[in-house]
Length: 548
Ligand code: G1P
Ligand code: ZN
Image 1 (cartoon, rainbow, N blue to C red):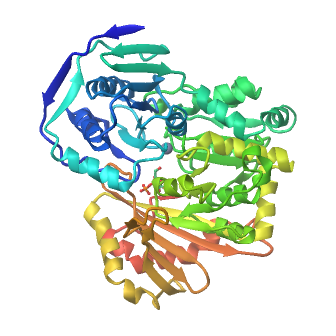
Image 2: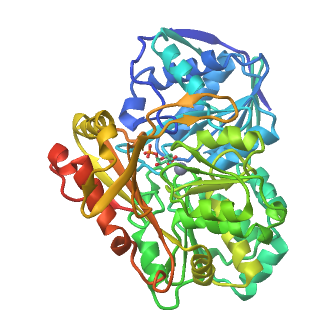
Image 3: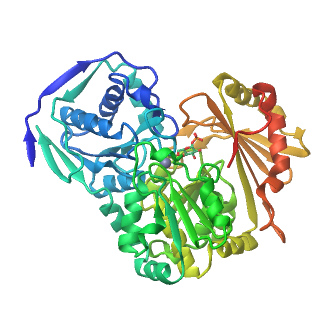
């Protein structure tokens, strides 16, 4: 064990005015974070806000993207200077977001700092991000992130320990003054948790005899997790895990597992002799995508199907007390919750809104349309967990991905869903669309566009059932007379310009729904949304930049 005396330095800086956290922490271009004192000022504001008891433990790690390693060194040195008792740091500076959340809980830590810009591109010209989680393992609630922002606006100095570079690649402890910096295997606690929730013996035999798995880690953080869990513990051959080495620029791959960015996986699923189960996870391991032979599972369907089949995994066999989805997520899960007679909560976009519900035991499963789903096993969404859950359904029901999905639609109807993203360079123009709808919301109900009559229109507001906090302006909702829904909101995770997200959903029943393309089922709603929001008028855009 290396031990050093604490050489404390207090460094002066000029406060920054742009350190307000968005949907999931502070995300900026790497070059912004590389400005002198920038990262330090944010971290000092977090320490000042959390006001941790002396001797507290903090977890630290990230998705391995460019600047991750430097940030780990800096934050460790600041933790020592700020009197943190123990830093639990993932080896190589790596920790997937769900593994970090789990480690906070297993180590009784006071919180954690996660370095990630999630699914945003990495590398020197890409994005970097930082978020902090509380002792529950969940992302800091808005009151805390806002307090940290207020603190950053007046941060005129920060504390740093003068120390030689830490060896973050070797497990072990280094003592600096009263602070222990412990480098730990990032995978083992998480792998143990998965083994508790799922029936690994059943999965092992299913993978041996029936299901050919293909997992793509997109050169991001889940590679080491997938290798340990799928190959070492479940006996899958190494070649079934692709892009398994975390790279600082993700090898040029866009680390977002959705049908647009990961089109190669859709192609694989549609090919002859496609693997039975294709899974992928994003930069920091919290998002996921599930495909089977000739079938891409939409995230809203995935959540609904998981809820309908809790019997397949030991951790869920007794059902769940309730379920939650973010407001724009398709309403597929509502039908299952109704059938089971359990509550279905509708929360604003962003994982942190699920955390109180999970912590209070009100829900056992939750998910978002943006390829994020999880359960009460952790306080973050969890990509690998979702793949294991699907594998458990295939094992327990003895059905293929396609059969599971089609049987679900036959029973509950199919909730068609699309998210249409308009990338708008000029933030002002994007804001004008929302402002115009907000100002005129009273007259939107009763209006029509592209053949669709709007029967109700409102602005989504959420009162947290646990702490009573109110979040206003969380998206505009338009309901069509025939049961369709349009949601509009601006993205809160971008680092430049704006993205207008238009979400559409509508449930249909009866023959033909399995073959019908979502585009056909939703084209009239898409036209109505564009017309009523006057997207072309405000932005000149006639088509979305991406349809997901
Ligand atoms: C997006 C997703 C949202 C997710 C967040 C973080 O936020 O829409 O569901 O929680 O990324 O992964 P947005 O850019 O829409 O604010
Ligand atoms: Zn992510």
